[in-house]
Image (cartoon, rainbow, N blue to C red):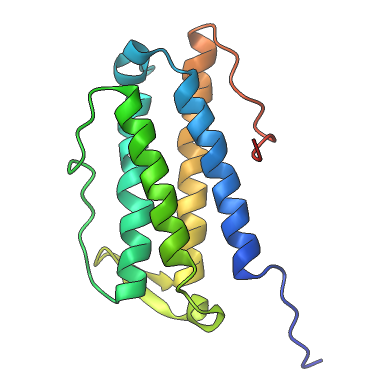
Length: 160
């Protein structure tokens, strides 16, 4: 067979990713301010630091993919001191993602791109990594919230 089937298109992938970002935003909201910046278990970074990693990847990476530029990974560029600042940056980057994701043609998803000068993979694999990494860190945050006696949002509720 020479037929090509598409499992999902770019718009469906973006909706999937933004659903996860929506859920992660609700997890950020669930943290008490102090614990967002200070609480950790077993030497893991506080959730604020994990969130900064996510913010340093998604928007800047998509911008680099669209522009064809080779930017560097910098999770120290943004140094928030409040949950409100993190949530504001999260919302800002959500719009950056929407803007740049829509500029990637279906064909480009198969192109190899050297992300941050270190990760040379097809664009679709880089984007799947962004989602996987977010899910991984959100899982850590669920452990933190439960240890703090806070019920995290249901992981399957991504559309709120």
